[in-house]
Image 1: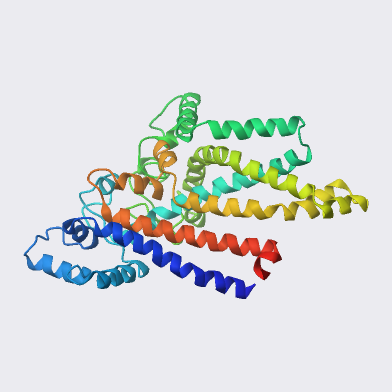
Image 2 (image 1 turned 90 degrees about the vertical axis):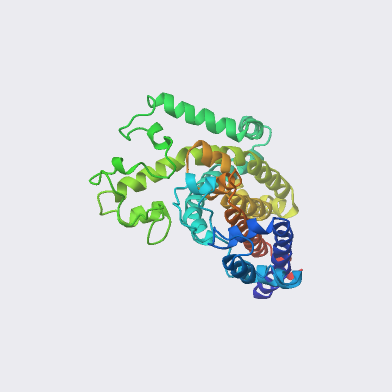
Length: 383
């Protein structure tokens, strides 16, 4: 198994270098002034000035293209992904102030919000898709299977943005509309860019955020807002903010889970049907084993190979963010940050950094999926 893991890690290196080379080519097509603004804090740098010359030398833009490529690869691997633009739309909406922040730092503030939403969505998908897919295969063409098909096809057909808008509208109507009291489900999604209610709604602290929440809504000590709120459960705002954070994620997680359960359920069902028709399952039945044991112990694990692959790639896609969902529900996530960074005035630092981060996430997810696949099926690692 260790030999297989090492071999897979070695194969990842050329993939990462290849992707970075493609991004380097795309970055090279951008005007020099834009590149300097994205990778330095010298916003007043003009051609011919000492500040400009220092920036050009630091970025290697006065060197041959192969040297520029090497500097770009080095900066990418050392997390020097540029700086945010104080004049961009993303900076204004994200309330980052007039300072040029390192892109890696800003992405580190926003990624935990998306990770928490992705984890909750995946838990809901696992709780629905795998049991329902297995039961749909066991009770093929029966009412349960027909109901699962309706769920699957409706998930395919219903656009995510429309479903999110309908769910949010229903939440507003059922809770009586938005109110300034910060009570009720609809108040959790009022137009305030952040995953917690405004400071005026915090118990015992009407005007300021707790000390463990930074000015840019980055939390400590872990950086994950819900987890950090639970860690500070003994403070006036600890449990309150944890519950508010979980509540804010429930509806968007259900929308995401409903959409992706449709496809994953079909994979689980088809994989289970294929395994149920294999010889070793028929042998287990011929031995007189109970159907429950045949389904759970013999067919269940062997049907997980394809499912694990799909779930791993799905989670990798989740981590890249949900721009539409995060926009509709006013959630502070990396997907929404990336989406608004491409709006005028663009923030090329965030665009470059987000592209590299998402590339590394997808590559890492592929490695994890391959390792899990090899663990479940020894033929993969021995082949």
